[in-house]
Length: 455
Ligand code: SAM
Ligand code: SF4
Image 1: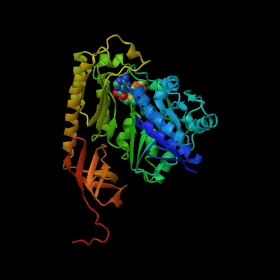
Image 2: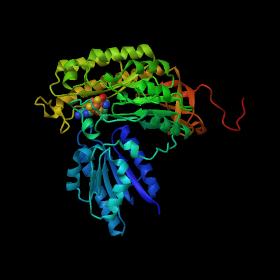
Image 3: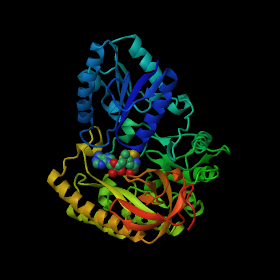
Image 4: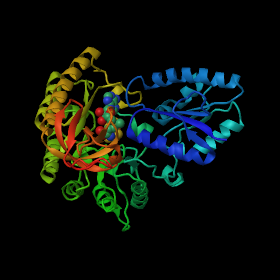
């Protein structure tokens, strides 16, 4: 009998990838995905710990699940509840204590053992399973081959963990040390994805350009070399990668931006701050000037490159002058898009212990000012696209009949009227209008609908 599996995914694209792998892992055991926890046999919360209130959100979600579990038990059934991901890694013991109805708690490096944990939780009723170990063997060696589930766009994790230890960040503690998958495994998975219809793959890693996996020639490959090999896979028309660190942008990667047409001209390159003092305190290991020079080299290699970034405002001790340096960097570089956050002290990280924490009102005011500038730049970038013709990869139906939504090379959503048999195609679209978060356009050569005669 089919069992139902519900996974709620929080946070980054790596969690989305992990959740998909958990679905694949449980399929041979008779579990099929469902989109509601109600009536599910197994519920997994795949959590994120990067910013504030993550644990509280999980506990409040667990309150609702507890009621569903009790209702299921009253009806003579059983529902297993698991907390996975980075909150599980960081606060596993506390979760088991505060929520004794939770059956399993496991970190991002342990989910390949999910079938075994489910068996233990099922057969020894009442036993809580905790697995937050960092295994000596990389989990990818123990996962079945990813099926390459059909989808026009797909994620592919090539690198995990981080050894950078930025002072504000929990990732090195929750995801563990840096690990790169061998190029052969990545290429095989990309081939399966392309074979099942993916035309665009985004390579994922907490620090994806720190990639240093075993290459096909027995040497260590960097991300640039891996991208060149992936670009040879037939049918794979677009490649992206995220998230990268300025320190790990090397000459080989810059050359890949110059030489590999499949590598899209849009790069998410977090800088966090424009102040050298703050960057040093954050242990980012680069200055604002070095960031500017990297951007210049990338733009020399690929003149149509557009940039996105992450910013943190209100890092402990950030002065008005530091903040002004961040605004100056933004004005100079000009971003097509960006994410920005108020600094949030994460327990166990060095910055959380600093005495000179800023008041929330100061952080909020700076964030508002920074976001206004970033939004202005995003609107200007979108407006400049009007009148241009660009290839759009159509992914899904739009809100209106006859409309499809796709992505431009710059990852903007583009709406256009076109029959939906064109999902999965890359079509030239002339952009006719720009919204703050999306574009509208019309096909350069609209195909006639079947049966329609030319005038
Ligand atoms: N590895 C990437 C890098 O080096 O920039 C980013 C990883 S993190 C998952 C994504 C973003 O969350 C960061 O770039 C940072 O802007 C933000 N972030 C991480 N920790 C934070 C904190 N304690 N407070 C506020 N924002 C934070
Ligand atoms: Fe976190 Fe990124 Fe710094 Fe690693 S490089 S510690 S993931 S912000």
